[in-house]
Length: 376
Ligand SMILES: [Zn+2]
Ligand SMILES: [Zn+2]
Image (tube, rainbow, N blue to C red; front, side, top):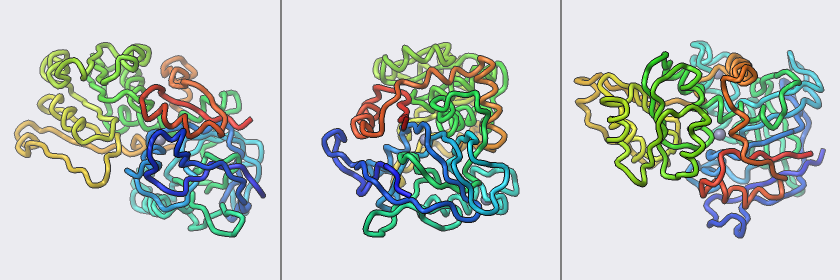
């Protein structure tokens, strides 16, 4: 079949993207689902900083590629051997397909799935196949098994979580990355308990979700740190109890003062090693620093080594919120519907696919939390 898609042909085009137009709207060919695969009509697709990282080249991927990894949609067809999904089902995408057989999957850590990571690295589905082609027959790579900047996509059944039909699909999409990553970092990776102190550095969609997770977990205080007053003005709605503008004050000292000696849990969601070092410095003796952002692969982190021993400090990475998507997407949706996770406040605006390039400029400038492409 043919489908409309935004194709990224080369990384590292100059900003503003509204002028350099790194994503081109094309009619591409989409092969139908193979064994264990599902044809999904995308309903809503979020614009995430990790997509921006592919566009600007700090997260290198094989080109050309149809990016987009935070999405919801409706199942339209299933290949042989698909279980538990049928045409008409509403689904949220998980950006790591979970094979269920490798060592991390066997240990209950599907976010670390080795076969899923290999497929994501090479830009294929879990089966190793590619389904998108240009008119000349040349293949286009998949992004994290999702490729949601296309009206239709094919995904492995291991990339899909069935959800109830009563959730608006533009809200449902946000559970696939921002919420799973940010809330998951707090409740799965860090396991924050009531009354423990939290600081969140960087207030994009993931950082705001970490605030929501901290509030739902009963953390106190919850300190939000950012350079932009506009982001800090929103942070209270997501659960922040104290605000620190890092452009105006020493953020490390401010967090240490507000938490009486340092946060028990410091989260970094910028993807910048200098901010990660600040988060570590703002954590207290015995504290844990959780890094959620994705720095460029060439960047290193330097910390005083003795603090890991003498102060029992911990640094943990959190990928996809250490989530078990089939457990966590339904439970986080339930918390949203109960009024405990204000996920709808992440949605800055909805846009058509044709506005994708300038919309990435708005994300790059920090003007928005989540913009969601709607196809109908
Ligand atoms: Zn994302
Ligand atoms: Zn696996």
